[in-house]
Length: 220
Ligand SMILES: [Mg+2]
Ligand SMILES: [Zn+2]
Image (cartoon, rainbow, N blue to C red; front, side, top):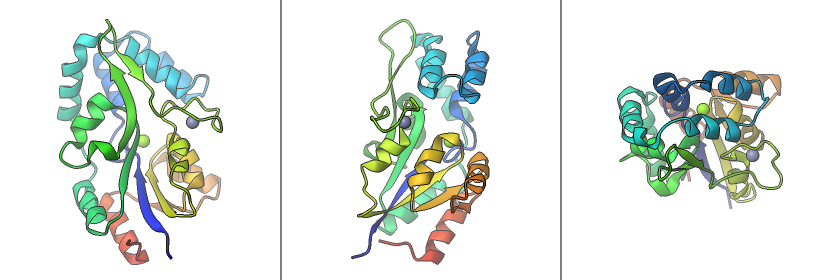
């Protein structure tokens, strides 16, 4: 019996044109966030610790303003709604695997992707400042302190049963791309895949992914 194709798609910079956490920080500009961002990019501190601390500098009362800002400014990459339909029509499960936070990821995907198919971080607004929750943190096999651990999620879908297709754009997708059966990459992830000789298909829009999957006959 052939394997079930299954799609794992990153959110920030993949489903959306740009990174929403960076856009939120630029807009609401809590003092010191840029130094934290630099530390994360230079891998001097983990994503979980950096993202947690940046949001902890923002007042919980900003929740509605932040959601409105993201809904008004974030742009879906071309072809994403058609891609969701393509996956449905062909019986390919589509999971969004995002290091973003539920309070802006869910509203952006409202009416497109079921919440049950979204893996992302959580949030708590009951305190004075925003507290990020980590329901999908690393398991014992990952030391990266990812926050949302993409490799740990992929492991729940064993390669013996699934043809695992990973779609992403950046360093946070690399560990998942290494485990995947097929990779669609853009931006920084293309460079990393080339460097490490990971087989991948570059893409710009979701129409590119649809036609590539059609050509390869990847249907359930
Ligand atoms: Mg991304
Ligand atoms: Zn991890």
